[in-house]
Length: 349
Image 1 (cartoon, rainbow, N blue to C red):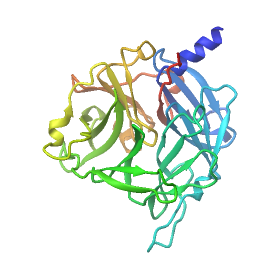
Image 2 (spheres, helix red, strand yellow):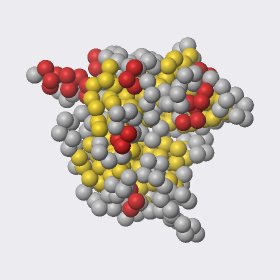
Image 3 (cartoon, rainbow, N blue to C red):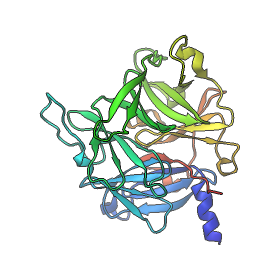
Image 4 (spheres, rainbow, N blue to C red):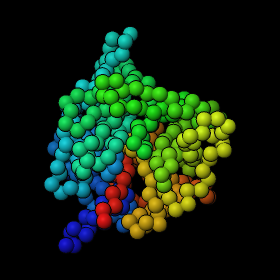
């Protein structure tokens, strides 16, 4: 009974997944994943695969891609490690008209975003959507459980993807929001939902690095703009949050839709994985700081972090104070190779 209660508690709390090297086993480098219970601030579970894999998360599930491009879905908290096989990732479309070469990237450098429509271990209707990049082109692809190939959607470069209220949405590099209709798998199509671009005005001059994320929070679809100078302290990172104006075609500006207070909610931003939000007043998310944004550093940002050992780190941005603090982690995880958030799945009643 105690084991079951502990398992449920872990499921319902945000988890931070680290990959790191095992100094006692060089052959398994980057194969070990540790799951940190954010509420209790301690490691809980360990994932160690014999084959090197890259990992991506959405709705509390993991997608793994092995060196030979094999793709599987798994529940990281399932001790039996049940898996769902998906089509090989090298079966996505890797060329477009006018471009002959579709050379594959490394297995761990191909997926730029991973999104699920529902939990694949509880819904056979689950759709899997990924954005990807080869040596020459970028694209989106999706598949349904049980299918043996990926369906190509479009080659438009994408910053972020999300599933919200029964639809897939995408954001391109110009800040426009697109809706992806996959109702007919033979003719998937994308249309522009909002052509008015997010105001990505540099906050720190021309050397600013900016990223956009889409997050569902309390039923609303939010767009998060992250800005920081390429040269300088990570503490200079700033965020702006906007609510997507569904049903409002005219008479609005993004500046009118800025969200300055998340109230009890916290946002968790994913790079290749899905972003999500939690309610800090909920019992299962009691360890999360309300009105804050949790984010991970990218590879080029490691250089600006004191004593980082060229390793990724995790930070929290306080919306009210507009300050950044680094999240402390147990000593065993002080030199991770990669970090990503795993969305909590509260137990059903």
